[in-house]
Image: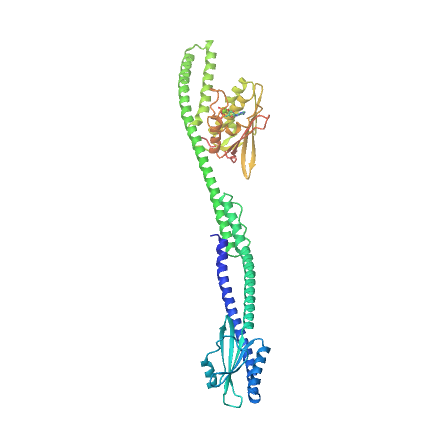
Length: 491
Ligand SMILES: Nc1ncnc2c1ncn2[C@@H]1O[C@H](COP(=O)(O)OP(=O)(O)O)[C@@H](O)[C@H]1O
Ligand SMILES: [Mg+2]
């Protein structure tokens, strides 16, 4: 059963009952009042007739009395019969009699004559309601010498009662209609409409639309329900956002884990590569040294062997520098001068730049100092510079710049490596920091350079950013904390 029907029944049933009782009482009261009116009216009329008859009995002949009775019946439309009763209960005179009407019982006539008190009785004759008044007759003073019986027809009473009933029924029906419409409108405003709007809100929430609150324009219970509902929706929304954030955090964690695992694999790989290459290199260097020592001072091979030794040393240093950072090591952060780092990095990359005929320009204030692990910074710069050197075509240009800036209220050093190569396509850009992601042909790229660099920079409390506007090459920027002007801490 719907709320509308239930409310309607809850209100209508008592309403109908109350109105019914009201109508019943009203009808009952009307009936009593009309009846009393009628009785009083018949009493007064009867009293007048009694006096007239007593007068006639004193002064006129019995025939005149009978004529008087007939005249009275004809004159008074509501009187249907008048009888004079003698002490032996016989009719001594009468108007035209109602055919076959058995009047009031003999017992009542007797009682009236014995007590001298009038009496009245209601009765029916052929479906018509009649009312008979019985009065004692005392034509000559105190003693009762007979009785007068006057019978009235109660038609006027019936008509009055009927119209009173109609009136009551009409008034009750009107009252019912007015109450029905008023209560219906009040219910619609106070309950049904707000409940409908609440339902719409609940529907919206059920469909997942949590951010549209139910309107709260009232201070009653329904208003409080709407408020409580809105609070619940807000909590649901917060919980959902929390869940989304939590999911994102765990996804981040999973990605981080994947990176770490990939880098650990890379670390193992690189350490075995370093070992595999390092061992024969050591052997080559040792043997070359021996040969060099055994050669006479003026031997023409001496210079060639010295160059060979220098190149072996160069290769060994590159391998160490390239592969060492894959061995996980905690950042050993100290004040470090940029110049000391560049002293190691630049000779290593200048060789490649020269071979590829690329201009390598360096612009850095000589006194810049950073709070970093020097080995880590070397590695990062080598990776960035090698990438740039590999990206630009022959005759291209790679620039390394360093400057001191303030980010927020923290002094930092900004190192940027930019090139005028083809830049990084937008579909490649989001992936370049993934371990093992490379666009270079097999055997040329490992896809580890940027992944490792970003980790190293982060470990040193810094940030590695990339920008590659279309047609303007690529710029990688490393931001690292600046060191106050304290001397380098020796390692
Ligand atoms: N300066 C640059 N210009 C254009 N692309 C670059 C540059 N630096 C890096 N990249 C892109 O980022 C990818 C990943 O770089 P990296 O992690 O160093 O791995 P690898 O150099 O072994 O490919 C490269 O394969 C290349 O596509
Ligand atoms: Mg690289």
